Image 1 (cartoon, rainbow, N blue to C red):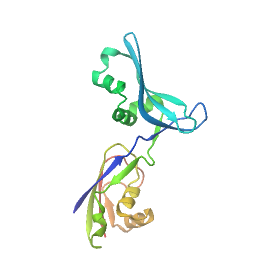
Image 2 (image 1 turned 90 degrees about the vertical axis):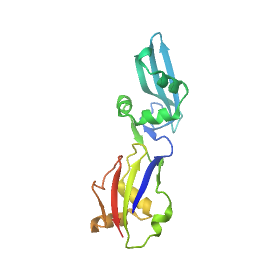
Image 3 (image 1 turned 135 degrees about the horizontal axis):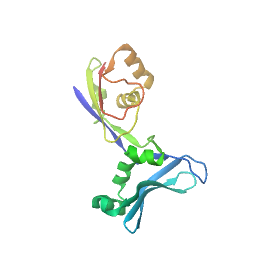
Image 4 (image 1 turned 90 degrees about the horizontal axis):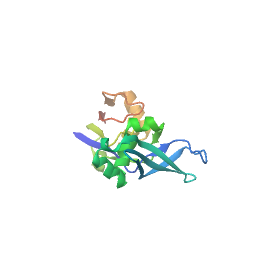
Length: 185
């Protein structure tokens, strides 16, 4: 039996960057953009608000680019404050590196297991699970497995140690890419 689980974002992650006004380190991106054109050059920023003082920070998306070199669809999405574009840009490693930011995905995702019927199976079942990520959300596989089966993380660790939970990938650490595992109950 193969089950499909999906790790889905529920909102934009918090942006980890130091606030110059209050020294907080968390900003909430709300999907708003600021676009500024100067003759043939264009700048664009994703705006984020400090979670403590409300100060705005600008995350550079485009910097001094020739307007003609920017795809018209991208310009439309920037002008429309497209929240999907904000999510895509926060996922982009180039944007994160340029702005020297990291993302905090705590409480910004959920695990969709397709329903509770996998918990009702016989104890002797072998369950194969394919985990897909709808976005590059770094999560510990042990946490996903514990949440998906309603177990404690210690119990999942014990299953790994006993060889009853196996995978081709290492289940310790964080993953943000698709993987599969087998649980022998």
